[in-house]
Structures are given as C-alpha cells and as structure tokens.
Image: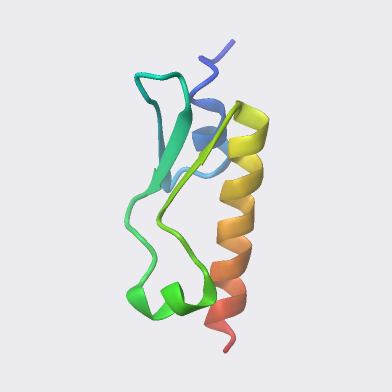
Length: 71
C-alpha cells in the first residue's frame, strides 16, 4: 500500500506532495502554472487536512487551469 502522502501524486504526477512539521499535507505543482493563469485563481501550491482533501484541491486547480486556458 502506498504511503498516504504519495496518493495524490499518483493521480496528478505533476504535483509534489509533502507533509509539514505540523502534519498538514501540501502539494506543489512542478512545473508551476504559467503566471497568465494566476488571475483565474490558479494556485501552484495547495494544502489540505488529508489525502482525500488534497486530491480534491489538486483536481480543482487543474480544472481551473484548463478553463483559464480556454479564455
């Protein structure tokens, strides 16, 4: 079974997942989204309490980036 902090990365390989000293999960997109997408609320780094929440916010950011690309 994969370590809990690697599961979102398995779903979105462009995201690097890590756990902070306080236990919160974070993910950083590598490479980051282009600056032109930032005005659409796209974030290159997200956080969540658990793996399910992190997978959700990663999917949300990818969706926003895709929609921003259509603008």
